[in-house]
Length: 256
Ligand code: NAP
Image: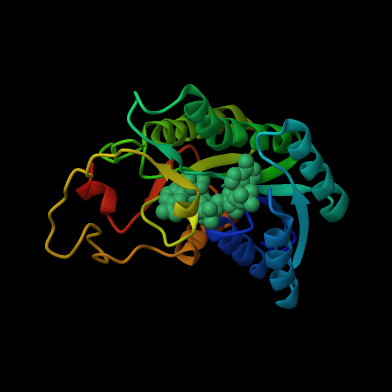
């Protein structure tokens, strides 16, 4: 990663913060994008304390002008762009279709899918040959369709995978790789922004040791996901493009 420049959205917490830390630790200069400046500054400070290079660009990924400004700030500060981690996302509202409002459905799609499009769109003109885009999708919308009420979230996550695959083909001739990662249950604060309304019980999964074959009831960590992000971002993954990679301890194979 030395000499490379990475822009990470949703970098103030969870998977985004861990990915930014790891990319910086491996030598990349990073731009931290999100809506909450104080959280981004805390991550930037922590990266700098460990000898890394980081700037903060406050932007809502649904705001095209703000994301464009974040990319410009990256070019000004670091002189180029090699890696984009389109990771910002929300669980949004989980409810049955009669409960879920059009505005709620649209809001989840807007942040998770349109926000991913906006992020990549503004980055692409500046991505150097050998560049890599990593999109944080999910097991929901790719292998798991039994989380009742998650129709907006799953649709947004399925859309991210389709977008990543389309762009892998479109950008391949320019030497840019595009992949999607599909985490299972990861221990982050994402549940804090979830509005679950009137949901029937989740379809039960019976397994002797819990829902995750590899770890039972223990979710993965942001740091484990960051290792996958850094791998896909780097030259070790130089022939990997247009694929989704599940990181879920085989959870999604049990809970289709
Ligand atoms: P998280 O800690 O809540 O991280 C999400 C980040 O996205 C936050 O830092 C949030 O910061 C930012 N964000 C949300 N809306 C934004 C917007 N409109 N513009 C810019 N930034 C925005 O949760 P996480 O688990 O690390 O989630 C990261 C990604 O992983 C998401 O795409 C999520 O769908 C995906 N994922 C998570 C899990 C899991 O189990 N945790 C599983 C599968 C997939 P601000 O609110 O301050 O902007």
